[in-house]
Length: 117
Image (cartoon, rainbow, N blue to C red; front, side, top):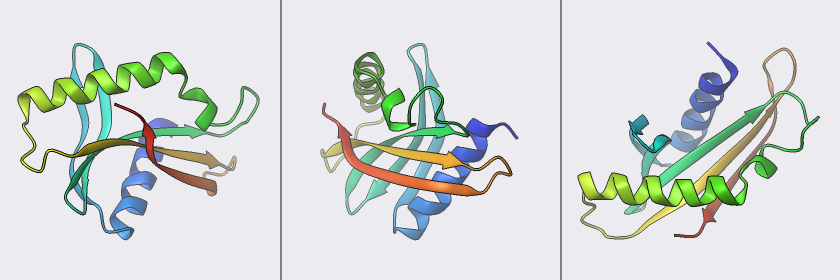
């Protein structure tokens, strides 16, 4: 399993422990992919997972640049066109994970409502 997929599984396990209900993962369309779709207390949550083993090019959080944020918003809106959400409210979270070389989690940072829509 690659680092990205492993990071997604670590994020899903973490979100489940926080009470999130996972609706899906790796939803794809022509614009790209949403890593995790979940529900948190009635709010639909699109989760971007960023996993890194080295901070040589910045932190995982820093990799969610302006262009990536805009794409995430567009992906969320596209998802909602095909999957209407009765509650109406949604947000985009980021789960940033740094791993040690042996695969253990060094740091996990869950940023709620990280990207404005």
